[in-house]
Length: 332
Picture 1 (cartoon, rainbow, N blue to C red):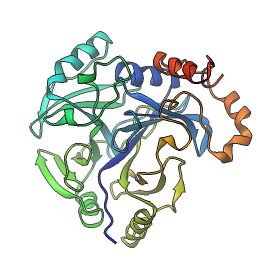
Picture 2: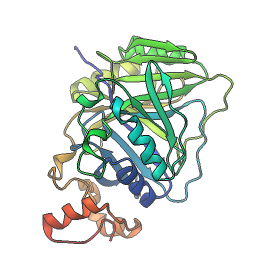
Picture 3: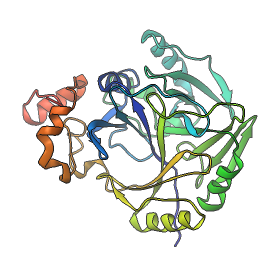
């Protein structure tokens, strides 16, 4: 079978406070709230999906909002940061926007000949905006208050922090069919398919750093794209054949998933591109209501009672009212 991993599907991180997370990613960063659901393994916890107009694979950042979870610690054995694409002309806009929001940022630096603006969210999660040629050709969400020419254009790169990179690189190149795309100091870049924004993973070799702790303010896992169930099953078999433990296919409602830990300790997922987020909502309805998979519907009242109430973003509430005339907010 000519199976392919075409790039990054999504990145999932952990948040402490659901409302602060919602306000930051829809407000400051201007991403679309694509889906409000729950962690399918812990339905007392929200699972938010942010992305472009449809939550296209390659644009999606998701969060488990676990109230009361301890702060994480960045270190080896985890994904260190997620970077979004912005047009080259947008760097100044984003510096000014972060300043106005009171968010500290690092002085822009060049990495692989691209400008990188790094900062953290309220939980300490490391984020980057990478200004590069061609970013304007990618679609972004223009329904928020970020001017259309400056919106985020999907995920650019994910950076892993490892105490040694060779075994992870071997998995990426020999099994997952990535190719080496660059090297700069202690960072080694690998790309899927034709490479470019949305298809790259950076391996940051840091042997003297302590081990990371995955909790609030850190990345939980990185998901890669494959086209369909048949290709996913083939990836499952190949990953198992190299001695890694891999889960069976799991139904995540909006895609199917398999999970495994790469040799450096980072949790990887391979997710299908379909069926997508409009399987249970229209494009207009996306992110306006708490959506549950069928197996949780009998417990909806108990689940809603356990979840904190949310103040939805203004543009989301406006759409919700337009759809059914209701001003009810998710979690109420």
